[in-house]
Image (cartoon, rainbow, N blue to C red; front, side, top):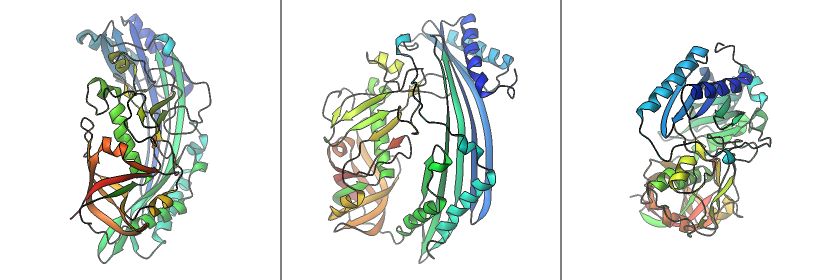
Length: 455
């Protein structure tokens, strides 16, 4: 069986055969992952096609256990010879490793797959002609350039898409597969004023083409965002309310995800270690991990160990309810997996999230801004000054200064600082504008006070 002869429908059979070969070669347990994907990207700049990329990939990974010893290998050669070499390599590596008492597959009772249609795949994306994809990118950029005379340049616009799939099998009888698709349009215009230039972007993303915003809307939104950054200044160092728009608020959720990752917990490398059941945030905070919501980008019928995905409350009305765990971290902590195993095509599973989101509040973003007399509206974060062990938080920021409830002038070259525990407990308002544009999603978040360091 050659690479080109194998269809998507034939991959589960290959995965099952890999497991059989691994057990015959001496493995006591085994897991096989097969992944495939076709990527497309059309980038235009100043009305001309700049790059056009199409790439396909397919690979298989094998993880074997010989008792409590683990070995892993992978291959992009799905011929019988390529698979045989992968199996032999994994077996040989397992013989060289030390025993780990916590190693092993999930119990059979923990495994399974959601039976509902999660609407993760659409043929519309794959069937869209290349010429139309390029045209969509050009339309987005053209709309940005036509929006205002001060939009004088562009870093480009793009149409990107992906169609892929995943197959997983193990020696405990699990065999599952699912396919995914997405497409996106983005634009990055450049605005000019008195010799200074500012850039910003906007994008839209969906599982299928019909779910996208029209490209003209993308271009106009990107242009408006670039324009409002012109003439940015530093502000005096001060304590002030800080509002994170949704795309910057998402970064705060990424920090919290890192802090509830089971690996950080069992290593005692998180400020949230040992705090299950404690109130660690304002009661407005309810933070959910849910891989079962149809159509969203963090959904899947099972995790990368063959455990069904689920809805897991992480923080509920300010109380820390759960860490996110795979089988290994659960055993280290004497707990149960939460179905959050994540891996590439080979190696031990790490921790991943499903749809990790903060539940929305009741006020619109405009209403939250109007409630602030003097504060900072953050539209971009720079750097990575967040310490998950101590909770210390310090990042460069760009945005708009709020005066008397209105966005008054642009701000750049400032730093916002606090600690994650103070920030979680200092939530003053949560917006109603929750939108799922990625697997991590947040509405507008307002903190009652942070240090804004400028001049």
